[in-house]
Image (cartoon, rainbow, N blue to C red; front, side, top):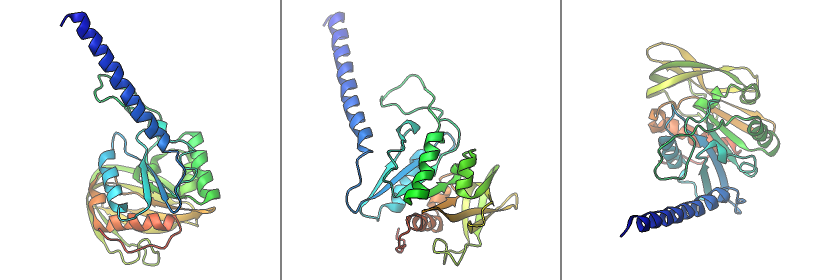
Length: 273
């Protein structure tokens, strides 16, 4: 086989693979905009970045919510795929994304030899759409860990807190769970082997504290979970989640389970692993 024939075959093969890839990617992206089926629960999750493992976060969250039949859980693989249309009929939005741009954008290629920086999540359009869907339509929001580092005044006002970032990663105790709230009623003190302790300074008198964390080395106490109603919607803020460790703790998994139902204004069924 001569060199020209080899080059020609490679070009055709490459073009064919690119076409197949495009055909596979484009319908998948469009599928996100399909309207909900009757009785379906639509959950949109935007999680993971340079500091926070998106693979473990997606695996854990799908595992926690998997017993719920009829739930469609869609993870946004890049900020470019998040649109106001995507959440226009969502029942629940889960966000663990800071104000930093994505260091490497999503690409459909199986092999890459260069990197391209992605965009940011907390754009003015996205913030406006999220607030509108919560306040006016009643969409629930779970704001996890780095969502509190949005560095956006409208987001802080929505969450009802002012966040404080503490950088040392260390073991944490979670304690003083609010026994008067359905998200944390019956939850006792539990241990997280390694995490970054964020703190929430409560700014709104409508905000209810759910639990407190204590850093083992720093001996620092901080509000680690809270919730509030905002317009027609409900919001739950949970600060553990810098490392995969909190998602392995049964008590924290149950808190996530209960938070999802509470945020959607639904009865909370018993949690089962």
